[in-house]
Image 1 (cartoon, rainbow, N blue to C red):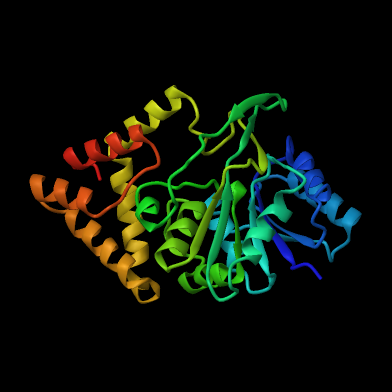
Image 2 (tube, rainbow, N blue to C red):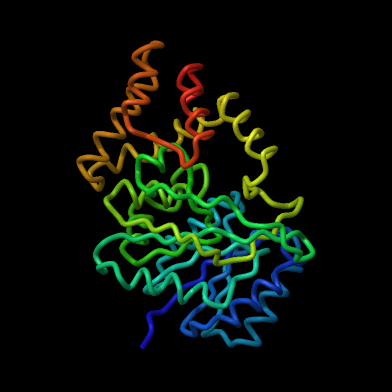
Length: 307
Protein backbone atom coordinates (compact mmCIF):
# COMPACT_ATOMS: atom_id res chain seq x y z
CA UNK A 1 0.00 0.00 0.00
CA UNK A 2 1.28 3.50 -0.82
CA UNK A 3 2.34 5.78 1.97
CA UNK A 4 -0.19 8.26 3.36
CA UNK A 5 0.35 11.83 2.17
CA UNK A 6 -0.92 14.68 4.33
CA UNK A 7 -1.60 17.86 2.36
CA UNK A 8 -1.17 20.80 4.76
CA UNK A 9 -3.33 23.49 3.15
CA UNK A 10 -3.45 26.99 4.62
CA UNK A 11 -6.16 29.38 3.51
CA UNK A 12 -6.93 33.07 3.96
CA UNK A 13 -9.80 34.68 2.07
CA UNK A 14 -9.15 32.28 -0.77
CA UNK A 15 -12.50 32.08 -2.51
CA UNK A 16 -11.19 33.18 -5.93
CA UNK A 17 -8.76 30.34 -6.61
CA UNK A 18 -9.30 27.68 -3.95
CA UNK A 19 -11.67 25.40 -5.94
CA UNK A 20 -9.09 24.99 -8.73
CA UNK A 21 -6.45 23.99 -6.19
CA UNK A 22 -8.75 21.50 -4.49
CA UNK A 23 -9.73 20.02 -7.86
CA UNK A 24 -6.04 19.53 -8.65
CA UNK A 25 -5.69 17.36 -5.53
CA UNK A 26 -8.54 15.24 -6.84
CA UNK A 27 -6.66 14.81 -10.14
CA UNK A 28 -3.48 13.40 -8.58
CA UNK A 29 -2.12 10.10 -9.92
CA UNK A 30 -1.22 9.29 -6.30
CA UNK A 31 -4.44 8.42 -4.51
CA UNK A 32 -3.53 7.96 -0.83
CA UNK A 33 -3.78 11.58 0.31
CA UNK A 34 -5.68 13.47 3.02
CA UNK A 35 -6.19 17.24 3.11
CA UNK A 36 -5.77 19.07 6.41
CA UNK A 37 -6.90 22.67 5.91
CA UNK A 38 -6.25 25.48 8.40
CA UNK A 39 -8.35 28.53 7.66
CA UNK A 40 -7.26 32.00 8.81
CA UNK A 41 -10.01 33.82 6.88
CA UNK A 42 -11.93 36.75 8.25
CA UNK A 43 -15.20 35.82 6.53
CA UNK A 44 -17.05 32.58 5.94
CA UNK A 45 -16.64 32.22 2.16
CA UNK A 46 -13.44 30.18 2.21
CA UNK A 47 -14.72 27.98 5.00
CA UNK A 48 -17.88 27.31 3.00
CA UNK A 49 -15.82 26.08 0.04
CA UNK A 50 -13.75 23.83 2.29
CA UNK A 51 -16.92 22.43 3.88
CA UNK A 52 -18.37 21.78 0.42
CA UNK A 53 -15.35 19.70 -0.57
CA UNK A 54 -15.31 17.86 2.75
CA UNK A 55 -18.91 16.89 2.14
CA UNK A 56 -18.02 15.82 -1.40
CA UNK A 57 -14.95 13.78 -0.39
CA UNK A 58 -16.01 12.65 3.08
CA UNK A 59 -14.44 13.49 6.48
CA UNK A 60 -11.83 10.74 6.09
CA UNK A 61 -10.43 12.65 3.11
CA UNK A 62 -10.44 16.13 4.61
CA UNK A 63 -10.24 17.84 8.00
CA UNK A 64 -10.68 21.57 8.64
CA UNK A 65 -9.02 23.52 11.44
CA UNK A 66 -9.33 27.08 12.64
CA UNK A 67 -6.06 28.90 12.03
CA UNK A 68 -4.06 30.68 14.75
CA UNK A 69 -4.63 34.12 13.14
CA UNK A 70 -0.94 35.02 13.40
CA UNK A 71 0.12 35.09 9.76
CA UNK A 72 0.90 32.52 7.08
CA UNK A 73 4.07 31.10 8.65
CA UNK A 74 2.37 30.46 12.00
CA UNK A 75 -0.57 28.90 10.20
CA UNK A 76 1.64 26.41 8.35
CA UNK A 77 3.59 25.56 11.50
CA UNK A 78 0.32 24.98 13.35
CA UNK A 79 -0.49 22.22 10.86
CA UNK A 80 3.02 20.77 10.64
CA UNK A 81 3.16 20.45 14.44
CA UNK A 82 -0.44 19.37 14.98
CA UNK A 83 -0.30 16.07 16.94
CA UNK A 84 -3.64 14.98 15.49
CA UNK A 85 -2.16 14.85 11.98
CA UNK A 86 -0.27 11.64 11.28
CA UNK A 87 1.09 10.60 7.90
CA UNK A 88 4.15 9.17 6.19
CA UNK A 89 4.83 12.20 4.02
CA UNK A 90 3.73 15.82 4.30
CA UNK A 91 3.08 18.50 1.67
CA UNK A 92 2.76 22.23 2.21
CA UNK A 93 0.08 23.76 -0.01
CA UNK A 94 -0.94 27.32 -0.78
CA UNK A 95 -4.56 28.05 -1.67
CA UNK A 96 -4.16 29.58 -5.12
CA UNK A 97 -1.90 27.27 -7.14
CA UNK A 98 -2.72 24.24 -9.28
CA UNK A 99 -0.85 20.99 -8.68
CA UNK A 100 0.28 19.01 -11.70
CA UNK A 101 -1.18 15.47 -11.67
CA UNK A 102 2.10 13.73 -10.82
CA UNK A 103 3.18 16.15 -8.06
CA UNK A 104 2.56 13.85 -5.09
CA UNK A 105 3.82 10.76 -6.90
CA UNK A 106 7.05 12.42 -8.01
CA UNK A 107 7.88 13.69 -4.52
CA UNK A 108 6.83 10.42 -2.87
CA UNK A 109 9.14 8.41 -5.12
CA UNK A 110 12.17 10.48 -4.16
CA UNK A 111 11.29 10.50 -0.46
CA UNK A 112 10.94 6.69 -0.56
CA UNK A 113 14.60 6.49 -1.64
CA UNK A 114 15.74 8.03 1.68
CA UNK A 115 15.93 5.91 4.87
CA UNK A 116 12.96 6.59 7.15
CA UNK A 117 15.15 7.81 10.01
CA UNK A 118 16.91 10.46 7.87
CA UNK A 119 15.15 13.83 7.51
CA UNK A 120 14.37 14.48 3.86
CA UNK A 121 12.93 17.49 2.04
CA UNK A 122 11.78 17.67 -1.58
CA UNK A 123 11.11 20.88 -3.50
CA UNK A 124 10.89 21.83 -7.15
CA UNK A 125 10.86 24.44 -9.85
CA UNK A 126 7.49 25.97 -10.74
CA UNK A 127 5.59 26.88 -13.89
CA UNK A 128 4.23 30.39 -13.59
CA UNK A 129 0.69 31.43 -14.53
CA UNK A 130 -1.23 34.70 -14.21
CA UNK A 131 -4.48 35.14 -12.34
CA UNK A 132 -6.39 33.88 -15.38
CA UNK A 133 -4.27 30.74 -15.80
CA UNK A 134 -2.18 31.98 -18.74
CA UNK A 135 1.43 30.79 -18.86
CA UNK A 136 4.16 33.22 -17.77
CA UNK A 137 7.14 30.90 -18.13
CA UNK A 138 9.06 29.23 -15.33
CA UNK A 139 10.76 30.10 -12.06
CA UNK A 140 14.59 30.24 -12.11
CA UNK A 141 16.29 26.85 -12.49
CA UNK A 142 18.75 26.43 -9.64
CA UNK A 143 21.71 24.16 -10.34
CA UNK A 144 23.90 24.28 -7.23
CA UNK A 145 23.44 21.69 -4.52
CA UNK A 146 20.93 22.69 -1.81
CA UNK A 147 22.53 22.47 1.64
CA UNK A 148 22.86 24.36 4.93
CA UNK A 149 25.47 26.77 3.52
CA UNK A 150 22.92 27.79 0.88
CA UNK A 151 19.99 27.81 3.32
CA UNK A 152 21.75 30.43 5.48
CA UNK A 153 21.77 32.77 2.48
CA UNK A 154 18.49 32.01 0.69
CA UNK A 155 15.53 29.69 0.40
CA UNK A 156 15.94 27.50 -2.68
CA UNK A 157 12.46 25.97 -2.61
CA UNK A 158 9.02 27.51 -2.43
CA UNK A 159 6.78 26.10 0.26
CA UNK A 160 4.09 25.42 -2.34
CA UNK A 161 6.41 22.77 -3.84
CA UNK A 162 7.73 21.26 -0.60
CA UNK A 163 7.23 17.70 0.64
CA UNK A 164 9.01 16.09 3.58
CA UNK A 165 9.13 12.80 5.43
CA UNK A 166 8.19 11.94 9.00
CA UNK A 167 11.77 12.41 10.26
CA UNK A 168 11.78 15.98 8.92
CA UNK A 169 8.34 16.58 10.41
CA UNK A 170 9.71 15.41 13.79
CA UNK A 171 12.31 18.19 13.62
CA UNK A 172 9.56 20.78 13.13
CA UNK A 173 7.65 19.33 16.07
CA UNK A 174 10.74 19.43 18.30
CA UNK A 175 11.39 23.08 17.53
CA UNK A 176 7.71 23.85 18.05
CA UNK A 177 4.88 25.73 16.37
CA UNK A 178 5.62 29.03 18.14
CA UNK A 179 9.19 29.48 16.89
CA UNK A 180 9.71 32.99 15.55
CA UNK A 181 10.65 32.52 11.88
CA UNK A 182 10.70 34.44 8.61
CA UNK A 183 8.73 31.88 6.60
CA UNK A 184 7.71 28.27 7.11
CA UNK A 185 9.44 27.04 3.94
CA UNK A 186 12.76 28.75 4.59
CA UNK A 187 12.69 27.49 8.17
CA UNK A 188 12.05 23.92 6.97
CA UNK A 189 14.97 24.15 4.53
CA UNK A 190 17.24 25.55 7.24
CA UNK A 191 16.24 22.98 9.83
CA UNK A 192 16.41 19.87 7.65
CA UNK A 193 19.74 20.84 6.07
CA UNK A 194 21.24 21.91 9.42
CA UNK A 195 20.40 18.57 10.99
CA UNK A 196 22.11 16.50 8.31
CA UNK A 197 18.99 15.79 6.28
CA UNK A 198 18.78 15.26 2.55
CA UNK A 199 17.39 18.07 0.39
CA UNK A 200 16.44 17.53 -3.25
CA UNK A 201 15.61 20.30 -5.71
CA UNK A 202 13.71 18.90 -8.70
CA UNK A 203 14.19 20.88 -11.90
CA UNK A 204 10.90 19.51 -13.26
CA UNK A 205 8.04 21.90 -12.32
CA UNK A 206 5.44 20.31 -10.06
CA UNK A 207 2.86 23.09 -9.84
CA UNK A 208 1.29 25.97 -11.70
CA UNK A 209 2.31 28.88 -9.46
CA UNK A 210 -0.24 31.66 -9.74
CA UNK A 211 1.13 35.21 -9.83
CA UNK A 212 -1.34 37.88 -8.72
CA UNK A 213 -1.63 40.97 -6.59
CA UNK A 214 -2.44 38.97 -3.46
CA UNK A 215 0.76 36.93 -3.49
CA UNK A 216 2.73 37.37 -0.31
CA UNK A 217 5.99 36.29 -1.97
CA UNK A 218 6.50 36.26 -5.73
CA UNK A 219 8.52 33.98 -7.96
CA UNK A 220 11.57 36.29 -8.26
CA UNK A 221 11.81 35.62 -12.01
CA UNK A 222 12.14 38.98 -13.73
CA UNK A 223 15.15 41.29 -13.66
CA UNK A 224 12.95 43.88 -11.97
CA UNK A 225 11.99 41.43 -9.24
CA UNK A 226 15.61 40.45 -8.69
CA UNK A 227 16.70 44.08 -8.45
CA UNK A 228 13.90 44.69 -5.98
CA UNK A 229 15.13 41.84 -3.81
CA UNK A 230 18.72 43.03 -4.10
CA UNK A 231 17.54 46.44 -2.90
CA UNK A 232 15.77 44.76 0.03
CA UNK A 233 19.00 42.93 0.85
CA UNK A 234 21.05 46.13 0.86
CA UNK A 235 18.44 47.92 2.98
CA UNK A 236 18.99 45.38 5.73
CA UNK A 237 16.22 42.86 5.23
CA UNK A 238 18.71 39.98 4.97
CA UNK A 239 20.37 41.12 8.19
CA UNK A 240 17.03 41.07 10.01
CA UNK A 241 16.18 37.67 8.54
CA UNK A 242 19.55 36.29 9.62
CA UNK A 243 19.00 37.63 13.13
CA UNK A 244 15.72 35.72 13.25
CA UNK A 245 17.18 32.51 11.81
CA UNK A 246 20.21 32.44 14.09
CA UNK A 247 18.08 33.08 17.16
CA UNK A 248 15.74 30.25 16.12
CA UNK A 249 18.57 27.79 15.36
CA UNK A 250 20.83 28.39 18.36
CA UNK A 251 18.70 26.50 20.94
CA UNK A 252 18.71 23.41 18.70
CA UNK A 253 22.41 23.00 18.02
CA UNK A 254 22.43 19.57 19.65
CA UNK A 255 20.36 18.27 16.71
CA UNK A 256 22.73 19.71 14.12
CA UNK A 257 25.68 17.96 12.52
CA UNK A 258 29.07 19.08 13.92
CA UNK A 259 30.02 20.59 10.57
CA UNK A 260 26.86 22.66 10.34
CA UNK A 261 27.05 23.68 13.99
CA UNK A 262 30.54 25.04 13.33
CA UNK A 263 29.34 26.79 10.17
CA UNK A 264 26.47 28.45 12.03
CA UNK A 265 28.74 29.73 14.77
CA UNK A 266 31.37 30.93 12.30
CA UNK A 267 28.75 32.83 10.32
CA UNK A 268 27.07 34.22 13.43
CA UNK A 269 30.31 35.52 14.92
CA UNK A 270 31.59 36.98 11.62
CA UNK A 271 28.46 39.11 11.19
CA UNK A 272 29.27 41.11 14.33
CA UNK A 273 32.91 41.87 13.59
CA UNK A 274 34.56 45.01 12.22
CA UNK A 275 34.94 45.54 8.48
CA UNK A 276 37.76 43.24 7.32
CA UNK A 277 37.15 40.39 9.82
CA UNK A 278 33.44 40.54 8.96
CA UNK A 279 33.93 40.36 5.21
CA UNK A 280 36.55 37.60 5.35
CA UNK A 281 34.61 35.73 8.03
CA UNK A 282 31.30 35.81 6.16
CA UNK A 283 32.83 34.85 2.82
CA UNK A 284 35.05 32.26 4.52
CA UNK A 285 32.07 30.64 6.24
CA UNK A 286 31.17 29.07 2.89
CA UNK A 287 27.62 30.39 2.59
CA UNK A 288 26.39 30.98 -0.95
CA UNK A 289 23.43 31.84 -3.11
CA UNK A 290 22.41 30.02 -6.28
CA UNK A 291 23.30 32.66 -8.88
CA UNK A 292 26.24 34.90 -9.73
CA UNK A 293 24.16 38.03 -9.12
CA UNK A 294 22.96 36.60 -5.85
CA UNK A 295 26.51 36.04 -4.65
CA UNK A 296 27.53 39.54 -5.72
CA UNK A 297 24.66 40.83 -3.61
CA UNK A 298 25.79 38.64 -0.73
CA UNK A 299 29.32 40.06 -0.92
CA UNK A 300 27.91 43.59 -1.05
CA UNK A 301 25.79 42.89 2.01
CA UNK A 302 28.90 41.76 3.89
CA UNK A 303 30.80 44.87 2.77
CA UNK A 304 28.07 47.27 3.90
CA UNK A 305 27.22 45.39 7.10
CA UNK A 306 23.79 44.35 5.82
CA UNK A 307 24.21 40.67 6.58
